[in-house]
Image (cartoon, rainbow, N blue to C red; front, side, top):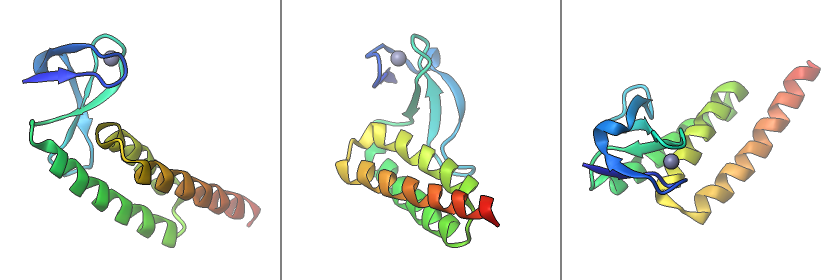
Length: 115
Ligand SMILES: [Zn+2]
């Protein structure tokens, strides 16, 4: 399986990219680390785009849930996952979504530090 790093363009066989963890605790997608620049690359199978999209939708639902219950820390972590997922999808809509939600998270954090 060939993997290409989306940051530096390094190409290599899957084994060169160290497995660093799952995208979600129980999801099928995994992060691998680029041996050249240390960038986290999502890689699984060639037909993974659909899976990545599905995961991105699932993550965004969890972001909503985390924000709804005021869990800024969790929302932040999920948004980070989402932005890594979007390195593979490159969807402007997701970038925009992340920007909007980050503002909401900052408001949450500001509100909780006041109380
Ligand atoms: Zn790289």
